[in-house]
Length: 518
Image (cartoon, rainbow, N blue to C red; front, side, top):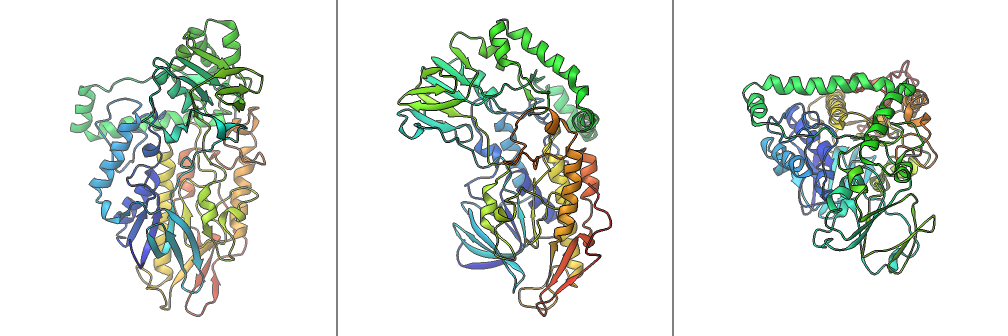
């Protein structure tokens, strides 16, 4: 991409959110758009996370687009390679490749108040856009802890999301740092081939069996011949998870039975009382993400595995030292320490109406109207934004709801500008929609009020759902059906209408929205 160009819509990222946005744009009749991707292929987190054992913990038929059902999923819980292949397939079927600019990392995007557009700088050139969809995702930038002595470690170091496939682990002494969703898949995958595996665990997770199996050829044939059976399967999976939501959001004490099942799962594999004590959480199940694995606990009982119930505190040469003083000599360190979720790096690169970055606007905590729009950042929305995450269902459901909101946002802009699409820069009638601070705060207050009694806030744990101030800015405290209803339409009363004709700003609706439905 050379020179400077202008497009109607710029989408940032080509994971599920970005590709979904691109498909929806085409289905809405919008073809003047680009997808800016920093890597050389699509896939987002399913491209970047290729560690041994990587797979999804949401059933395959629910972890896919409703508009692109896949009758040929090979397993009930698909592996990374199958999900990535699915995203490549979606890219081709919906003819998205001409719109994608690979190796085009966004370095900065700034609101141009005179032209009412976003000026975007990328590693492959500059462009401007009437509207921006930020679909970089919360699981895109790995978080590496600041461990004293790490810089001088003589062995190999990498994060689970940046797996070094050229490094041979066979016969090596390996430290696995972290016990989250990635770690419990990596441990059983590498345990048979390493000489020694030392697992550093700060907080034990609750682990339930992963009821995974191969999907038979007969099932796949049926789904191909009778597509409604695929939809029925998806609907059943969705309905079960919708019924579970109240236990997480309103009645956490009802999760006691699930805890009992999790302890029974542990007891089946862990016979050593001392090891079982190390692995038993002291918080309510669901407070942190419930993990699914049928191989994790058995792997921890193998003679070449040590579980250190303490976090990694220091590194002295090739010796890793835990906070409780436990030491181990290792050749490699693998960090499964999560991502920048509540402090997304893209926020440092987005500059709004007053010259303030999104990161500065969110310094007190992330908040966005209906999980999409931030005040002071007109014609900009994020996919998988603040408080749109889920603790028990598929994020694809939330993404599609936000795409409904995006589509109506563009329709409203077209109506307000007196045409479809809005005119080119510099012509009268151009408009932008900027979320009112009052509407953003009202929405966020409602969300946070509902959050107070959820298991994520009352379960007695510290999780990556919480930001630095202890506020849950990640999870949606309701059902996916509720969120879909809340994002079906753009309420112009929640936005200021900014017009370019004479540089003035017009408003629709009352300054305080009468009702913000969270």
